[in-house]
Image (cartoon, rainbow, N blue to C red; front, side):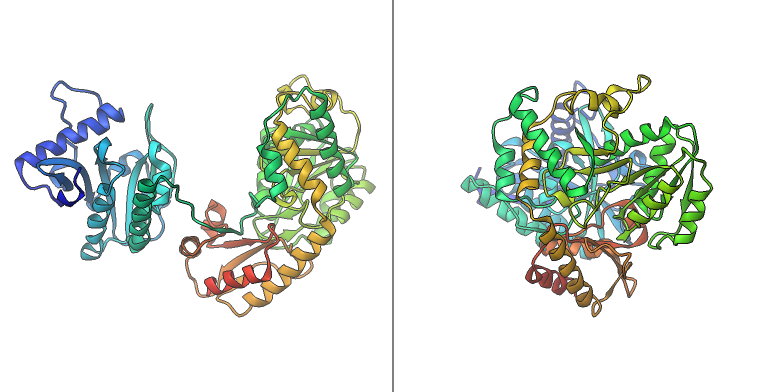
Length: 533
């Protein structure tokens, strides 16, 4: 391949169009089995009459192609119903299709040349959003190029595609990345972009935690594993005043599902409190578990009034239960843990609390709760992948009518090693619990929260929650001027800051979130505030 002889043009001859059909066949029949084979070994696209093919030629050979089409319906319209509902606000989207490059040309400048020339057309036609069906075999590449995934996978079998989009105005970033990728490939190095995360998880880990995760794994049946597991348990119990706890491979959702099945065994009615996304999720989990309950739900971002909680708890019979989120991550509200526990105990009610985003970020005492959940990531600053279920009683009767993996009683009987466990995840968790000074961490997060709120008071964003009921670990931002939070999040990512804005519940409300779970410095926060401005 001679780079100087590569030429980019619109396919406009019979010979070039025929080569397009044959490259289309080799790529989307033989390599990616999206279409059935045929004896002619040529594939004519169903939108061929409307396509304008941008091609790269090496001499007389077509070695790459790309087509852009702005006429609806798109190809994606037939694969993804209500396509526009998944897209950010735009006026004139265009669908990029049939990106194909011959294998021996994929490590050179062909892709960059195609993208460069394709995006040059955007301002001429008024295109403000480019959508594409990206093969799952190259998702890492598309992400490097600036494409954002949306919606579920489409296609079938080995021909699966992820719908993605990119703003044409990001073409500079895309082309710069492509050029860097070309240079990295030529030098044998990898591309790494330094970013600062303000997500509520995963949280950046320390070198010691990283080292614990990096050692060779060992058997979960060994005495060494049991020792490290017990060390991690003691750390959690010391931090939360929990009497007992089980550490189970899985997510916080799994931990809450395990609790829901314990609550469902009570035949007396229960109550779920909901003032945000995660309270609503508890309600859904209780419903799936077949529990008998009602939900006390108030608008997101509001605090429960003491009188309304007491009234709802008083309506429950003795032997009933209450389940709630301590730190409602979606809004930044802290629900009154000790007060709910105290009143529920007076009524002889079982208490369960989702403390997933609270543990490790603010002081948490679950000694009065019958069940509480946490995770290995977030405030504990370990690797994600472990769900934690804390429980008051030392032994719990097993439930033979549910899967053993979901049975807390079974895990207790097996002394916390019911099934295959990751020695690396447990070692990383034990390490972070052993090295953290959580009292100091609470103080730092609270101080950063005060600084950031003051700085944001002069910005174009307001903070959803404030006062004693606001958690210092997560700030939910609302644009004062009606700006698009999604677009702000994308722009901040380009600047090297990762915030929460992709979750559906944030996107629907035009909210953006800053998490302080990584306990960033004031200098780091100052650069973020400057970028927000």
